[in-house]
Length: 373
Ligand SMILES: [Mg+2]
Image 1 (cartoon, rainbow, N blue to C red):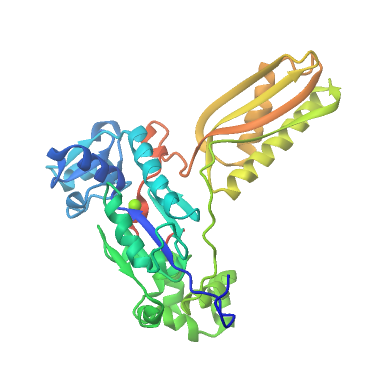
Image 2 (image 1 turned 60 degrees about the vertical axis):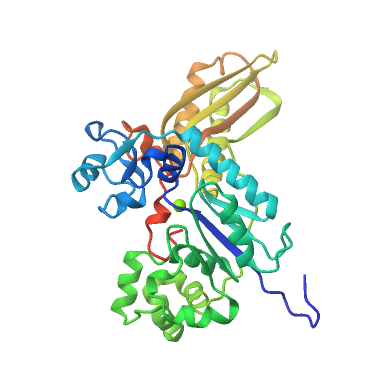
């Protein structure tokens, strides 16, 4: 895709992030909650945590991931709403269907956050700003949007003015925008890295450009080159369309039936390792490990084990192999084995006795302008 003269056309990237997602949905569906400090989460006396806080609650210092007991102390008038994740997922699916009606290039980051490449779009809007404006009107929940020539800047733009914000960084404004940003705004710079950079006198994002590459490398390691690119406002990463996977698995049919339990364990362990590496690549955690065993007579059984979310290889392999004890593998010949992982989530369980904590928080709302992922 090139314009006359061989120039690569400028991309128009949207980053859309719903504001206080779960709390906004509750306030949308229940008018009596509007204008009130609302926290979605578990009960304070059952070690519940805040999964989402309305903007009214945030003025009291109530934040996602805070223990609910503390949230109530900060804001005695706090209205606690128990989460309805089925509803939030349905709203999310509605919003993503809207995104995909505009462009197939939609990259979900979580239930309530996505990148859209709208350089070409079904609305035939030449301006990303107009796409964002129409999109915000069409979403039946509060969202903030950022429009920029790349993902890095689009994400900063969407976080610039929340809630209900729309920030456009036009190509000619990129440089002046970059000039004002602190070093924390850089993708991959968390509080620890920011502190190290500040210790080297690198306070602002533009200081990263001028920094001696060797010194920068000593300070932040392999991140150095990437940071210098971002500090120049350069980010070539494409918006990669991906649907949220619900499970992953592999299975093998063997040329000869397996009878030796040691061989069977080795096969299951190898598939368990594959599942763990798949989870790591997709930044997901699993709660349920399932094995499938087909005996020589084609009888097929599955056995599952569910516990706290994990993507730890040893944990997954150990559980998959242990499930063999619940089968006749080793006494009956086996012609097929499989291992799969289900109940996937983006967050590990913070507190096992607290099921809400395993579901994705809308933490991105809480971050400063700098992306955390
Ligand atoms: Mg959000």
